Length: 170
Image 1 (cartoon, helix red, strand yellow):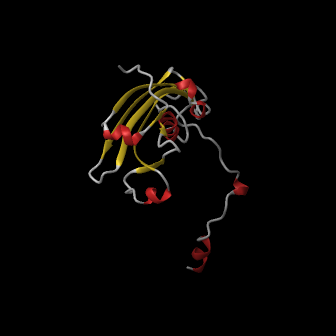
Image 2 (spheres, one colour):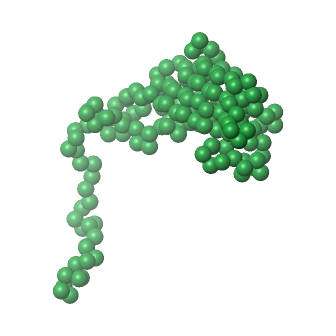
Image 3 (tube, one colour):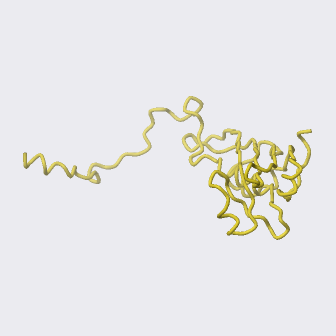
């Protein structure tokens, strides 16, 4: 059941009326923006999406996505694997006026001209947001020495303490 290929575009309104739950995969090789920042270590991205209608009558998409990727550690320059996991909660809107009516606890996603959203792109964007700002091993797994110094300022570039003037006045 987990290896079902998911549709790329989906109509969230119709899916929410049926209370649809989708669970399947996308090919990681098709997520080129994600692969520009990391290397693939698995062939698939696991995705689960649930469509529902909340108490206010709004269409809501919730779900998760995960993929095993590799980064280069910025401390020791060795490759390491990391599981990127993202969760999302969206409410689709047809236009900007409708988007303003959606409560702030939902992220807004724009529907295309057919009333659909590109689920694969949505999952890819959420995984991109999970990429660490500075990819690196855990400190105990890193081959760089823990006491390494990455750079020091020469003494002539060090700025004087601006409060030294107050010491003279005292």
